[in-house]
Length: 129
Image 1: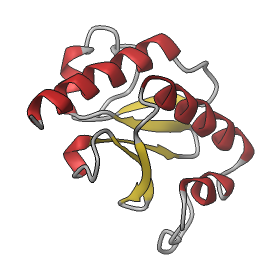
Image 2: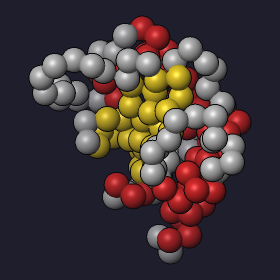
Image 3: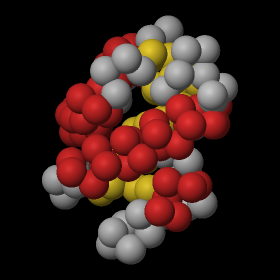
């Protein structure tokens, strides 16, 4: 969010979401539900002060998917390899190397997000063996 000063220290993902504007809360809760639908065993933590989902027990940062709320979008951070694998389908969205911005005024692309999470889970699991 575009607030001045240091980012607050949230204790839980619920705490993080509760401190966002209502529309951002709604989108973050939707995104969280989508992630947990395909990764029900993902452990929720805060990493870099944002909601993160460990795809493997005690996962390091590159074994997590993250999300964050902003004034005009929710950020989804599935990892650069996932972004590359879905680059064609993500062309309609503003992106970073390992992130995509989903505007608050548009529905979340639920099927695409699910497929991205599944892709990243398979990738992480194959690397952790």
